[in-house]
Amino acid sequence: MNNTTLFPLVLVDVALFSIVEDHLRVLLVQRAQGPEHHRWALPGGILKPEIDANLESTARRVMRSKVSVEIPHLEQVHAFSGPDRDPRGWSVSLLYWALLPYDQVNALVKAKVEKLDWFDAANPSQEMAFDHHAQLAAALQILRNRIQVTSPALPLHLLPEKFTLTELQKTCEAILGRPIDKAAFRRRLKKELPDLMALTGEVQRGSHAPAQLYRARDGFSFNV
Amino acid sequence: MNNTTLFPLVLVDVALFSIVEDHLRVLLVQRAQGPEHHRWALPGGILKPEIDANLESTARRVMRSKVSVEIPHLEQVHAFSGPDRDPRGWSVSLLYWALLPYDQVNALVKAKVEKLDWFDAANPSQEMAFDHHAQLAAALQILRNRIQVTSPALPLHLLPEKFTLTELQKTCEAILGRPIDKAAFRRRLKKELPDLMALTGEVQRGSHAPAQLYRARDGFSFNV
Image 1 (cartoon, each protein chain N blue to C red):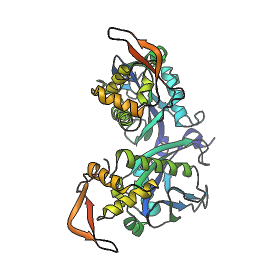
Image 2: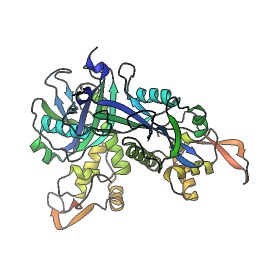
Image 3: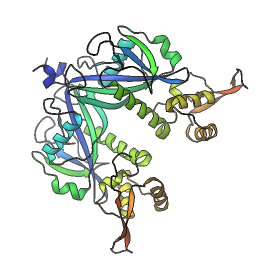
Image 4: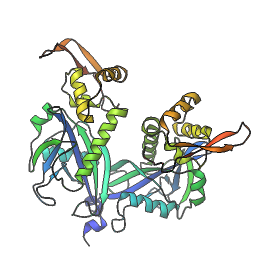
């Protein structure tokens, strides 16, 4: 009888989402050692009770040490548990999700040990380690629900500081994986996004007509 | 250095809600031993990796052994964790919530070891053990959000098999802790509750005019 028969392994996994070329992507690492050597996995690691203040601290420490990223805000998705999900023994993995703008995160992300890459969040097209395929699906579902039902402002966390309403709509479409009607989207913005501020006199110029630039209001919080 | 310095304690706690005399109540147990001896707590217990298939099994086993109740459906609220929340050591407690009709649960509930009682869910008016006051608040918040935003049919799980629309409204009001406008409530029912079935020719007679009786449609599921 090894220790994990009496004491379960406690881990965290993190689904970090970003928008890459108009697609919602998730950061995966290729495992550099066993178990599940070479398979792609959500970045994660084992709780260290002697140094972690809570499971959220574990998640932040893991993301810092494995992919060099400071996560501003984490939310719990679900605890996955059982004797068979990890060959090391009975385990509990607490899944978190996080959002970061790609231009900000990509400069920072560095694989320390494992190889990493960004994959299509809805269809990562890789055989994933452990139960991470189910974990990713659960995180994506909660993200989509949150945007549609309770927190329409969440996509602001994926955009650069200044953005146009078209860019905001494209971000929502990337998360939901389907086109949105523009008129209905603009009406919803007016009603539900008081956190949005037009930048007086600032427009984005490109191939189309100049487009008004916006930013999130100061003190805008993750929780809506 | 004891084992919990290296291996965290993994527990579950369960917020079981019911409607008692038109009020939303939660089942608490008075702890028969330390830690937190004599304090009121959500029923809970320690994961046993050698017999539990997952954390949900732990929750079912604990509710069966501590209060003699079979829980038909459990949902995760949140994982509470840290070195100080339980004097026995670094701990992770996964909080679940569940709903049962009072007439059904009250006949079954029996304290095996600990004393138990039903308390006002929004204001249990007892000093609670561990971080269970915060846990209860989190469970109540998720229940209220679910009913208002995503799952208007949840209150059906708190009602007897046959009920009137007035009883359904009273149950919603008990959960939300505030009165609801009757006309708006009836409009919402029509739109969002296809799981509701009028029982032809069956009415409830009392001091008022006879009221149509309803039941949940066969195959009605907890998840909406």
